[in-house]
Structure formats: structure tokens, C-alpha cells
Image (cartoon, rainbow, N blue to C red; front, side, top):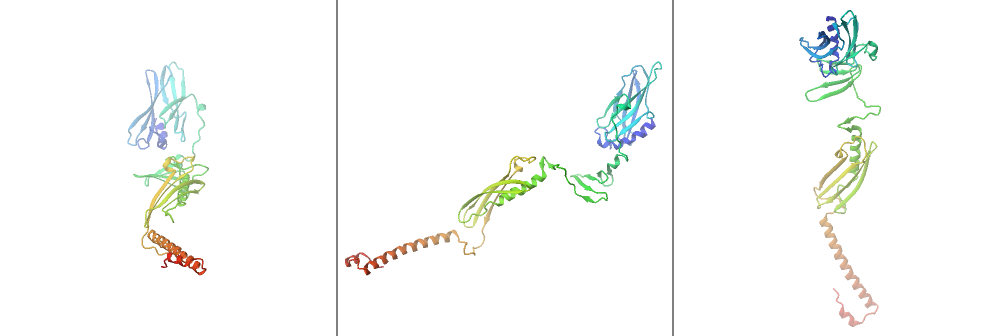
Length: 334
């Protein structure tokens, strides 16, 4: 039994993958055998570093007239580091000198279950990692960093976040590259596609007016693309007065994208205002009031021009003697 306990202390390596057997609770593994009402049983225990035992699973044999039972490592024992399973040989002695019946039990650490296999040939092929699973997954107790692989992916859990980074054989931090067509999703959204969508949405919005010129209201449509993704936009700009203008617009990506997220993830909008400070200094910048004054002056000049043309026509008639002297009394020269 001591040999059994010593051998199965290796199970501490499997415990990170087990819901029942937790590494922080159990450091060793052991079995015990007994016969209750001629029914042989094998019990599986997890043992803490302080020696406290916890019963994990009990296996009962269906063999009748059993006089003895033992879990004998001398005959057979195997651990499957990848699947988290242990195989041990159980010998059952029957009444009447019937001899000893050898049985192989498969204990699953992950599911905390026991199954019987008749012989070793029924066990699927097992590949054991040559240098132990600690070369694949290990945790530095001083830093709290868990490493996966020798040139590894690093994981560290803090009170506020789960950190993730990669290193090479020299311990230098290297990029983590999602390749071979795999997509990196966050809450179901494709990160790369989201970046492209943001670029396309922004580009589409830039094609819309922000300040109307020569009018009090201007509207438009726009489109934009980034990284192969397209977006369309529409919006207007309105001049409230000679100092204040407002603008508002929205854009949306093309429908039918995979892993695009909800509607709000494919939609963008903006609103703003433009407040003109100071006095216009460019000749081409004329205020609304000045435009109105110019309009009144132009109308006055047009009326004066009409009167001058009328007087010229009359003078021309007098010069050509096409008008009688009595007709001159009709016209008053200003």
C-alpha cells in the first residue's frame, strides 16, 4: 500500500484539470480495499498535505464468493497524463481455491468516475509526455505566473484582471499572432472586422457637410471603406444665424457581416456645432446683414438707371424733332 501511495503522489500534477480533485486541497492519492457482504470494494481517496483524507469514489465488484481483494501495483499500474486517468490492477481471490481473478480499473480524475476493463489490451493507446507534464504546464509560486509550453504562453491572475502574454525560449516577450484563418472574438465580435468598420464609418462621415455655404441648409450622402469593409452615411448642416451653425450625421456598415455584433456595433453618429468668433476678415466673407444692405442698394441703383434711361429717350426725341413743343410740358426734368 505504501508503494501505491508513493506512486500515485504524481496525481498532484493532474489536479489543475479536475473539478473534484483540486490541487490546493489534495497532494496525494491512495486506495483501500475491503469486502462487505462478500462484495469486494475499492475506495479512492484524495489526501491533503496535512494528511486529511477525502473519499472520492468507491468501486464495487460483481464477482461472487470472494475471499480476498487487493489493489496490486506490482502486477500493473499506469497513468495517462493527457487524459487525467489512472489504471490499476485489482486481484480478487475466490472461495474454493478458484484462484485469483485480475481486473484493471480505470479511474478518471476529471469526471471522478471508475470503470472496469477486462485486460490491458482494452485500454486505448496512451502517449506519455517524456519529461512530465510540468514541462507543458507549470506555475511559478513566487510570481503567480502560469506557463503553457517551454516557449510559452503566460497567464497571471490578479485581483482585478487576467493577464496574458507570450515569451520565446530566452524569456523575451513576443507578439501573440492569431493565424491560419482564426478570428479573435470579444463578446462575439470579430476584433479585426470591428477595427475596419470603425475606419469605414469614420471615412463615410467625413464626406458630409459641417457648415453650409451660400445657404441656410445643406444635406449630403457619403461612403467610406477601410480594410475591405464599406459604410454609408447621410447628414445635414444648418446655419442658425451668422455666428452659429449645427450639423448632424449618421453612418452604417454594410449588412451581412459575420461576427459584427449587435446593431449599435455597426452604427455610428455625430452631432456638433460651429460658433464663429471674431469679425470676418476675408473680402469674400459677407455677413447676412451686409448682404441685405447690398441687395437694397442694388435695387435703388436699378430704379435710378430706369429713370435715367427714360430721360435719355426723351432728350433723343427732342433732338430728332420727333416730339412737339407742347409735349415738353408733360415731362419734368429733375
